[in-house]
Length: 548
Image: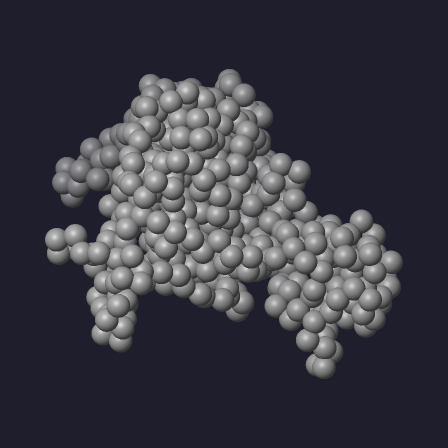
């Protein structure tokens, strides 16, 4: 074989020199040298020992739709001194097969496979056609596949696209080089890697498999309603009730389907499960809005889960491993205070809406203010208070408002829009977390909306919890400071991280999947980035506004 190859090499080299001299084309020289260097590989089928920059450049010229991965692929080989990653003694390593298998099942990660040259990727693992691709090409196709899969599954869409969705939480960092090292050492991390993805991702992935199975079962009949019936309640009897019962059984809200048309005790439990999981007030009445939610297509449920798996990719697992933090989920109107891995306090919240949406970002709570003044924002002063003053000259007195130089503020007390306590975290959006005097509004199915700040139902309880191990602040002193009418500021010795997020589906520790209304209509844009389409969810949440 060597006797056969050497004359050909000499002939081609001579041809290359003549060609270069004639056309003075440097690019041609690179191509000829690349061909000559890889000729033994093409003829003998022996694996390459190393990759060089010329090999990389020529590969990405031949496969232009992969050139977006060139920087990352080059970095992989630079770290490994340009040695082969995917071959050992002429054979594909086991991890190459595992990577290919996972990419074939990428729908399990809530994604679509959209990498170019899939036929070439397939050929690597098909003995009948693999011979048509050089070893160098196989090597670099696999490296491109790795970067593609790692970015799609472990990192997510580009940061500028994330910001377009209004998400400004800190994004995790990911080294494709270090990730590859860990995957080569522990290939099982390709399936589950909680050092890279938060635990919620895998809970949602399990829920996704359940809903895909429902889709495969083709058991999703449209629920028909009787035109004269506005709401269904316990004791009612109708065909619609049996259809609702079956839907709840399919969704797992009922353990069995008795096919009974009667709204009985068993169905009551299923309705409570469904309403709790979907952000409704937990009662037994079934209205058109609830049936519309049940009639949402299974495909949209699947996309909702996939969209929120994508949001999980942006978050560092270090966040959920912190000893203490507060997290707020805007669509669910919920706040959770986590200490030492346990949820020590949950509370409902109001958030902003429309042009005064609550921003999705992170900060740290640096101080607690008892009996706070409310410094009225200029926009509220101009658009709401001044018009009210024109109608009622005593408006300021009635609402405990006073001028403080050129600005307006509300004095501490029972009418104060911030309630008796607020929690300050530095940000450029003028957003803070605070109590509210409008406690009765939390009894509605959907909380009222604020001007952007976060109004909390259990603000007092949060202050108690934060200060519970502080001997200088017993409950009696906290209560006194809250009701003194004198603003008191306490600087926390250890600031508490606070993360304001946006998830329209969330799986709890028991694996139950919750769905919430997309109140800021952010899912559609994210769906476009992921799937080049939109969800087109028709149902929206009623909008009602508070003074702050």
